[in-house]
Structures are given as structure tokens and as C-alpha cells.
Image (cartoon, rainbow, N blue to C red; front, top):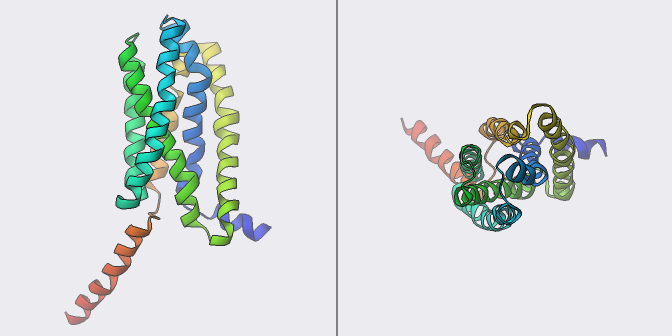
Length: 212
């Protein structure tokens, strides 16, 4: 059991990022209805319409962006997704009560976040551990992410909202994404197509050096 845990914990840096993505998703689900109604003074229909973008965006992002990562690599797509989510939340925070802008920003943010979560829990974990530990690795990634993103983060955001105002708690996803981007920059590429290209290039480079 100890060797199994050690093998899973020795995975890529990207495994640690699931907590950041879950922080964003769960804080949005828990606090943003209050932010939209109490802070921006939108009515219930407007709030419901804006938050419906979570489902639409999540479905689109989880389908398209992981598929793109099969072609161009996990790391570039994760970095793109995190930057898109950060930008969307940034614009969301300054959009005021503009329902259309809020809807579009939330859709982009959720699409990017669900893509990040899908990539982290799925292919990156599976490609970073031995085949016999794939299920264990994914379980550990989800479990650790839920402890921090699903347990501590909403409590911290709620405390911020209580003492400093809901508008400050709404900025929590920006901080989580900022930390997540740092982790992505430390990520080692795991996509088979990128690894095959790197492996194929090494003999060519070695042959050229030998001839020289």
C-alpha cells in the first residue's frame, strides 16, 4: 500500500492542480448566486440564466479542449484554458449587471475549468503513473482536490464574504487560477503524440552530432 501511494504521489505537478479547479467551480456554485442577486441586484430569472451557462460551458469545454490536447499536447491546452478562465473571471468582476457579458464570461470560465479538471483527473494522471495504478491515481487526485477545493475553499470564501463582503469572495477564483497557472508551468508533458515526437527527434539529433 505504501509503494502504491508513493507511486501516485510522485506523479506530475499537474496532479496538484485539481484543487485549484475545484475551488473555482465550487466557490462559483456556492457564492455566485448571492453575488449576482445581493451585490449586483439582479432578479432570480437573470441569476438563473447566467448560472445556466455553467452547464453549457462545461459540456463544450470538456468535449473540445481535451480533444485538442490529443493533437497539440496537454500542457499548452491546460495553459490556454487557465488563462481563458482567468480572463473570463476578470471581465466578469468588472461587468456590473450586464447579463449578456456575465453569461458569456461564465460560459468561457466554466468551459475552461471543466476542461482543466477533465485533463487533470483523466489523461494526465493516467499517463503519469504505471497502468496498474491508474484508478488509484485518479482517486487520489480527486480526493485531494475535494479536500481543498470542496472543503477548505468554500469555508475560506464564506469567511471572506462575511467579514469583507461578497464581492471580495467572488475574487477567490482569480487567486486559485493564478496558483494553478504556476503549477501548469511546472507540468511535464504527458501527451503520447508529443512524447513520440520528442523520442523520434532524439536519434536524429544524436546522428547529426556523431557525423559532426
